[in-house]
Image 1: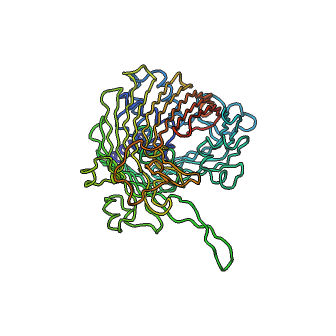
Image 2: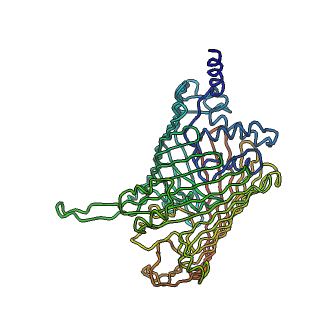
Image 3: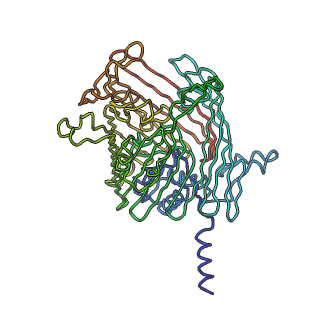
Length: 555
């Protein structure tokens, strides 16, 4: 009897608050912070190859960092404490709901160092949080001689039930005023069907999922942003890809990890004529993406991985592609070789504390015979390659991170001969991989500096060299050098390709920003972007944009 009492007491002590299974959005700053701590040598076993991660996993990592506070700078300690408050893993009673204090004590809603919610609820089995989505972006463009304002508002609800079920739901609707062309500088507006196809001044956005996680195995069905890859540009799934619906599995078994995703993509719709009603009916053919990765993490300082990807379309789901343990290239050949397959190899190595190297190569096609005759410039062997270096303390001063990236996308990468976009590596016309056309070389620099616990400075620079296709006045391709993913490979063309062949274009992009967190969850930021494009045919042009952003976001 004493044994069971002690065991029960131990469980209660270890789990005063059950694990939170929902994920933290893949574009949240917390991942930059964890990367810094990982490279610095504060935390172990952190790998950002596939994001997002569950709160449960992130909480464990933050607790590890909390146990090594002697390795943190004062600003990093302050950031750590703020993340603990936002994740509701410390000072769990120091929260405030606007529904509890409105209207008489509304001033207490803005008290410093507490998490704020429209409504939150916690008991022994359920954690529920509801918050508004509120963001206002003001954009000035010198080139367009005008401004645009984007006001986005909505609601999100998230939480966990017991220690195994997580959920998230959000919906927002934005209103645009001012210059519509300038508004399209914002990614959500640029990818919005409502804004671009119906030509109204509104743009909407929704995400949601249900996630089951038990032990080291997680299963998720829903829609949220996924990032998959090494370095800044993320070769497999980048931040450029519109969100899509998916079924996702992740598991860890000692040094072995498995990540799997089956996604539902969008390709352009078309109209068919119905003779019965004498009307045109809109249709959309199915398109899917399948990605699986097996990773090995033999130590805290090194990890390897092999990622397989398949694009297939215009037919129902294939059961073979729902199997996370199959070799996808062999499976697609057994299905009559109808699909577009990719194979990627990645490696990450922390050389010393303060220095990490990583690299990934993604093959669209590998043809051994053509490599032996034409080398890696063969049309039949197409690939993208990315190498990344991250530097931070103790090599650099405290609170500073510098990230350097080198990306090569060989000609014709991500395109595929077929019907329209059905087998291209795109979702609704946007590249799933980096926002760079094939036949390009991109060099990137990023710098983050935590000035104090509330103020972060960021700077970025990109140099993109590109070889573009040439077109006639009607937009028809005159010379296809593999510089546009929409111009797919045609049989009988050149057997060998040259990087940067075609119309040579150089783009230089510089961006600097300051983000200030007034109080927890309330942000003000300003950003300046400069873009210079030099094309050997069309000449040079500059772009100058200034952003001012206010947003409310706990996570």
